[in-house]
Image (cartoon, rainbow, N blue to C red; front, side, top):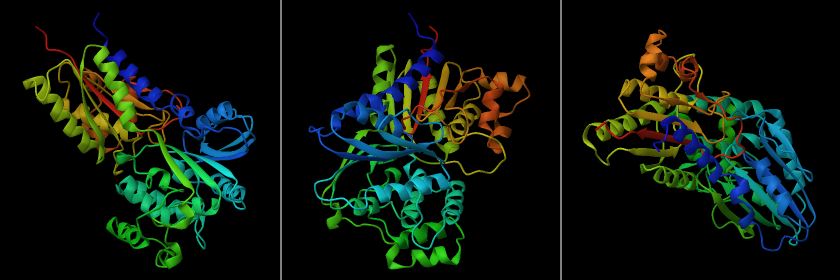
Length: 423
């Protein structure tokens, strides 16, 4: 029986999310000895869901504190869950960061710490470095988000303005044993980049942070610049003795989510093509996807329909207009404009955390008739793109995807389904 393309795309998105959910992936990685006392700390969009798993699996004494995004909490019994702001930090995130440092501040060699880390941890565990204020970090963060800087560049700057990131949390925990369990939301799954690497060494430098601010022409107050020029702003470097008892384990990655979706694609009788983790401007990444889709439809290359193109990663949006919508809506809007109703091509783009940017949707769906339906409503994809209004465009078509917070995060998920040509 042929699959309805829209239903299959929604199922692929759900499959990708499930493959990266803490309840699927965390338990098997916890220490074999689950007796005795452990302190649990955590930060990120998946932190509360991860804490639930630890509570279920741990037999010994357990206490702790995790911070997650507003709306992403869970009803834990022994681990306190606090909610704070993302992507721009607020004072709730600053307060919980101070409490986390206090919790691990006077530990001994016999103590064990479990650190539950996922995307979003950078802004949720926000403690400014000495002499800086939360307002300083917020202003730099906002400027970076609007600049088109990559996630790696943003995190380099964030780490050097922080009292907790770039290995500083591991230093605070020393000499306790630290087990970090991480869900990756970054291209390449680099431990130093996931939530700015609070418990791992950081190879980037304060000088690089200053270069990034200069590259994107971001003006910072004199005292912020003075801090970045101060040797004390440097993060924990590889080989530092304070990392000797710190263990890092990736438990879910974007690739796992894409492979799970690819298996479902095959089961449905389509051929998957995984492009992997991608970065770049959302609208430019969309043009490349559109070119591949067009080549498949017109020439059966690099593979023949029926097929599904899968990709993940984190695109960026340089904000030019006043519309609403995150990077997934922007990607899909640019794809719609590029393909202009190419027959047999359907697409879904969504954020696996359930929130596209700061909106209430995870993403949206495009169908072969999206372009024509929008035109019939007097909407232009080109005009909407100029205004960064992907949300408004797909809301008018009733094609937004709303999941609510999923409590995991392996970044964006994109699937372009191309039906077999009519005989």
